[in-house]
Length: 274
Image 1 (cartoon, one colour):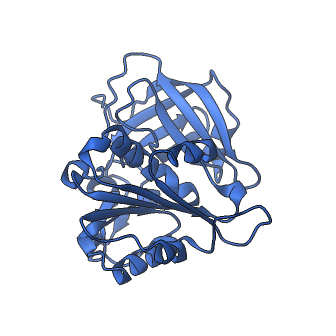
Image 2 (cartoon, one colour):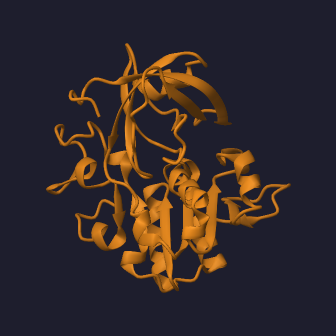
Image 3 (cartoon, one colour):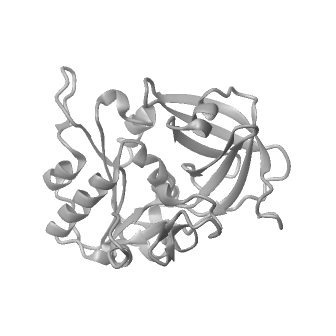
C-alpha cells in the first residue's frame, strides 16, 4: 500500500463479462495496473474501487492471488458507484486502493477437505479462495462447491462452473422449478442438507445473503460441523477499510480491521447481526 492510504493506484479495465442481466445485473471486471504492480493480497481481502467523479466502493477481490497479471471484481449493480462501474467500458480507467481486511487462513487448512457454499453474488468473495485451492490442489483434500441462485439466469460464472465439474464436485441449485433445470430445486441451505457434506477433516466456507448464511451455518452444525470448521465473510459491512469511519463496527469490533473473514467460533461471540 502507498504511504498515503487514500491515494488509489490507476488501473485499466481490460475485460468485462456480463454475468447476470436485468435490474440486479452483475458484471465481472478484469483490471490491470497502469504502473508497477506491487499489489499483494490474500484470498478474502477487499479493495476500494474508485470511479472518478462518482465515488468509491469496497469490493471483494474475486481473482486468486496466485494470478499476478490482473485483478478481478464481480460487481452487483445496486448504487451510485456500482451503477457507474456498470456503465464503464474496456479501456476505461478506475482507481484501486488496498487491500483491506484479513484473508482466509488457507495455510491452516492444508490436508483438509474444503466445502465452498455460495448464494448469488456471494460466490464472488469465495471464488478467490476456491481457485487458490485449485491452484495448489496437492495441498488439500477433496474440493466441493455447493452453489445456488434465485434462477438459473442469476448464477454467476456460468461457463467457469461447467469447467469446474471436470476438476471438483459441483452441486448447483435454483430456488424454484424451471422447465430445463435438471439439478436441485430449493434454497442453498436445503441443498447442503441434501448433499450431506462430511465434517470429517473438513472446512466449510460460505458467503451469500445473511439469511442464507444463517441457515447454512445451522444446517452445517446439524451435520456435525464444529464452530471452528465453518468460515464466512461479511465484507458488505466494510466502508472506509481502515477503521476510521465507524460504519463497519459490530459492538466495539471493526470488521475492516479484524475481518471480514471469521470462523463461526469467532463470529458467534459478536453482537448478533448475522
